[in-house]
Image (tube, rainbow, N blue to C red):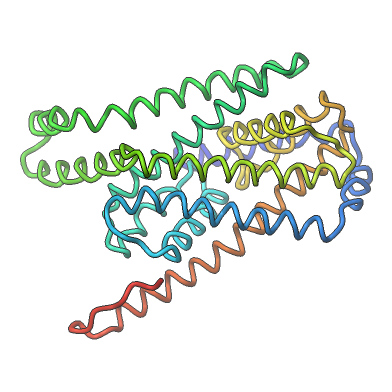
Amino acid sequence: MARWMKLATGIVVSAVCLWLAFRSVSIGQVWTAAAAISSQTILACFVLGSCTLLLRSVRWRILLESSEPLPLTTAFAVNSAGQMGNMILPARLGDLFRATNLGRAGLSAGFALATVLAERVLDAGFLVLVSASALTTFSNLPGWLTRSAFLLAVAALAGLAVTVLLPHFENLIFQLIARVTPHRVQPRLTRLAAQFLSGLRSFHHAGRASGFLFWTAVIWVLDGAGIMVLSHSMGIALSPTQVALVLTSIALASIVPAAPGNLGVLQYVTVSVLVPLGAARAQALSLALILQVLNTTTLSLWGAGSLWFLSARTVRAASAPASEPVRAIS
């Protein structure tokens, strides 16, 4: 029942946001703005989106390899399928898919889930820095954006504190499990806790941390380049600071419960940010719709292919003779 309530709430939120976004603009105006975009621009944005998806897998693999070597193809397939799941499933269940499917590569689900958590927290932390820099240069932004950025900053700092400090309390956590849980489940819970803490500890290494932060910066620069290319092709001249503000706003929009793909919320947020920056409402709405189509297409194509890759590998492993080891697909 709770799942259906969340889905119903998301649909209502999306419907309200779509009405707010479209209430003073016609479909014809939106179509005219979208028609100005060339196919070369669409292709360039698709390539940029595919590159960032690959680099997110490279970045995640840095944390995963603190446990053992992992083929990039495996990290990319699991990450792509999980990101597609996040697009169509509520409560970011695609991240849970990412963690559980790494068991096929020999990694523990608890360890993988902790790396997913660390990845999300550090991504949010980077966005906090970007948004803090961008917000100081504007004075005519909607109040919800400033308040949301503050909440994101608090959540990111809390998550960063957990990521950094929790592994240092390993013995205390084990003692707590021994005291408050039934004896029969203590070994399993202790093992899961150890795996999870090991995943968080993967970032406590200077080389891995610097590599992770480097690729994070590259990923967000490429995401910003995609928005800048698309906006300029529509006649919306955005500065790098304004692009950073749009990126932050879109990230904040993903937190709001909505229909699959964050439909409606993305359009309303983009319009609310771009119109005060000088864009026409039809242009802003068209840009938001095209961004959503591009993101959906990119994740669907790579995600569906990744699901096929993972399924084929599972079939191969199941049909291999027991005495014959199955090589990791690289």
